[in-house]
Image (cartoon, rainbow, N blue to C red; front, side, top):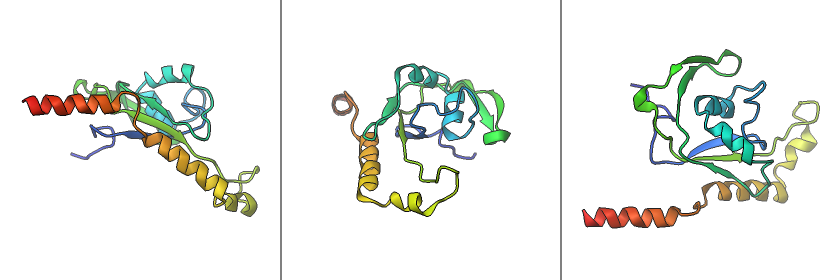
Amino acid sequence: AEATIEASTDCLHADFANKYLGGGVLWRGCVQEEILFITHPECLVAMLFASVMTPTEALLISNAERFSTGEGYNRSFRFAGPAPMAGRRACSPLVALDAERYVAADGSEGEPREWRQYSRQHVLREVLKAAAAVAPWPGEEQREQQEQQQQQQQ
């Protein structure tokens, strides 16, 4: 059997997100983030509570269940059926983080904007964003301590 990201457990899944959570899921997009939100519709609820992500912010979504499967990508993406009941469990925690887009206004890879990503200010933004994404979330340390205590008692 082929291993998939969706099948992995006990790990943090990353949603390389649009700064507007969900990206184009409700109107035109169908790439990584949008596919995730389509197959895990409970993620759509988070869009009601999240505004534009700030440069030092990442968003955590937990307990979103996978209800469907798909195949293809972007314009070729199609519904492939409901998720198997065994796969309809809450997925691993999901962290959404966005990155700056470094292309010219006309969509070309313009040199002045392209090289800006290597400036101290922009590198710091990306490092802070990554740190926010992997920082312990509220209650994580207590949960881990409880799990360790339970394992010791067994």
